[in-house]
Image (cartoon, rainbow, N blue to C red; front, side, top):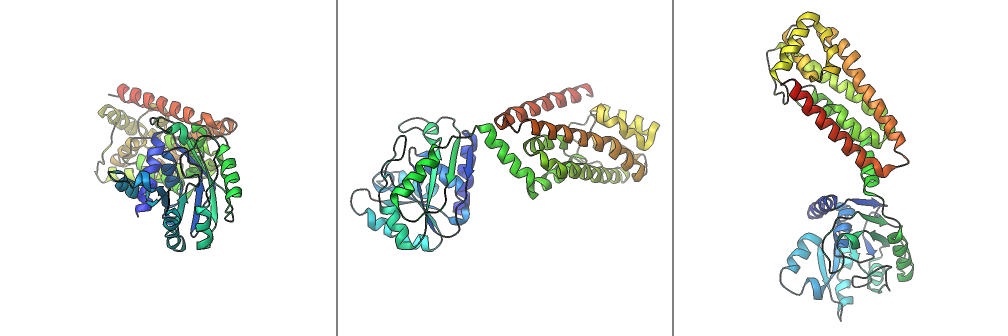
Length: 378
């Protein structure tokens, strides 16, 4: 639980300070993680990248982090650190970590022994003797961007950080140093590209599908933000995911509309944020004149779908004709927006770094449009 809490904490911090990209995976079971070291932010990046299941522990300089004051408590609580002496006794300190490795923990060691600059310096042998004694592999990790985020003897700045896991290696200091240097030297992806990859992973997952269904259904009952907004963020990142996300949004929205119609028929009135009395009056007039077909005005009127569904229920409109009209008009608008998002996502494939700017612009335009609609119907 502590490892998961640290991971979430540092992921949040790095998201707020420029973002984090993680590539590669850690093998299951105990392992010694060796990484380049240029900033105090390296440990935060590693703890954010390592899976909670490995409950990582970090070897920290005893003369710096455990010399007294507030640092020992912070090191143990936020970095899962244990002390390793740099001047005599370090081998014995490292040997105590054998039990951690055999219990399945990942033990993080910075073999340079101190923060450096540029390419990794000579790797000391302690981490590799530890891996050999425990019978576990060495995993090289390259960290990039932390020297810009928190320079040595400098202040915190915004910067994107990349953590790259290499393939497990035998305990060879030179081979590990070469691989760590190679991984650390790879270019840091632009923040927009990293955000796009994260959104694409969500879009392709069951979580993304469940989120679209829940959002679309809720919007047809009480939620004030249309499902097209979520589809925009997800489908632009993963155009192929639109094949399942867009129909799911349409079906869930229709189901939510039928729920709201039933509530209206029963005389219930769920909360409806950003819905004005003038909106309700206009929909009541349209429903009295056109019945189920009144919902055809919804896509261009700016009035939420749930208002039409609730008024149809209060007016005693039959659910099936209402559903047919809603699919034809409301469903068609969702599908059209989803198609446009798919085309935009395909166009952005060659410029993934523009994803964040495009989504921010789209959300900004939506917010302005929503404010204008509410003001017009106030």
